[in-house]
Length: 159
Image (cartoon, rainbow, N blue to C red):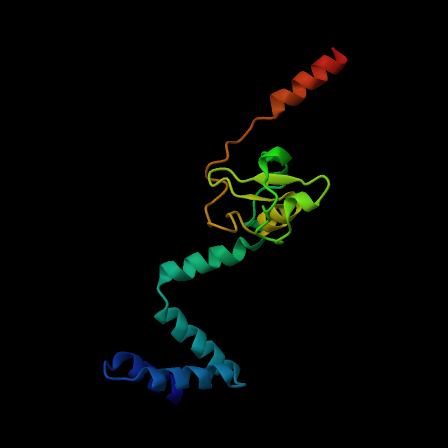
């Protein structure tokens, strides 16, 4: 308990040094005592603004939801080989597009950066931003209602 009191004095004292606080936090963090670790947690929750704590909790809880919806990359517009120059490369894998006999190159909405379909699909499964400019690819991609298309296809096939 004495260590916690000392730490509070460091926080309240405007003349306290950062190194003193840092060493006490390190000592509490690396100690084997569970009570010290819970005390460290309490102190840190008091030091970190509540809004930032909430943002971190949401970010952690959305861990697997950070990427784009499944199938999003399949809906990206393809780039024809006639629109590629011989020195165009994928910014993710650094391979020249035209070295492949049948390159599958797509461009992202809004920023129009081009990538190999395979590379950008993997990237977008983890992040919803362009790897080059960090623009949110979901912000400008319009949602296409495919429910009526499927009905029309079924009607034409069966009706």
